[in-house]
Image 1 (cartoon, rainbow, N blue to C red):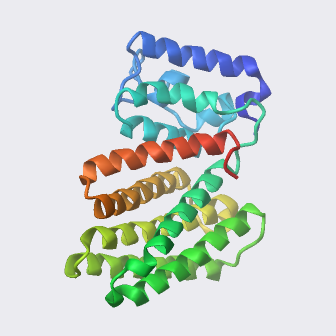
Image 2: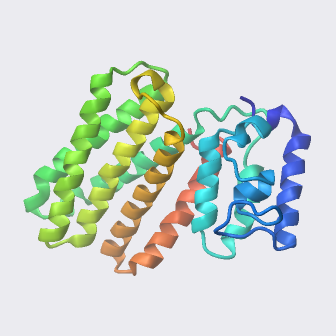
Length: 269
């Protein structure tokens, strides 16, 4: 699959279409495509069908869903420019088959590093939880890296990671409710839940024979991943700099969207 089918004119055509939608006020949040108005996907294709991104633009459907997620969640005026910036970041002819996984891997690495930086400041009562969390995140990141390198991973390894991360998610949720550091605990819970979605996404995308009936699940997992990772960053910011969760969440979504553009441009691999 080649982005824009390898044709710069196709890229220009869709960017002009989006710019016209912005100029005429037809680009709107909260709707797919009405026939005259729509969201990021709708105003790109003149229909709401993320799968059609693959046939008409040579862009994986999961990236189209991520584009739409950030469009719906970015604040004004950023959301209006976002669909054009998304397409503009992609080089005609680029192979984007690994772009979503590259993005998830970079996000998981970022979340893991934040825990490592904070580790020495944690209360002793959760030291074992942190140790277990760093262990499972290290294994999850290694699994994503191996998939990017094309290495086959046994089904038992996927199951082990997913069971361990779900157990840790429950442990951190308990700590958030009963412990003394709500924000930090929920940040850890969201981080390990991100690992659940990222590893399951990788399993389905690269080893579909292990996943049964997948249908639209990769895109749903991608949306679950970015939501969890943004929550992790937001809770951590609220805990560290005492800002409101809402402000921290908006900032996290904005930062994430910029990192996705960097991946599409090939600046993060």
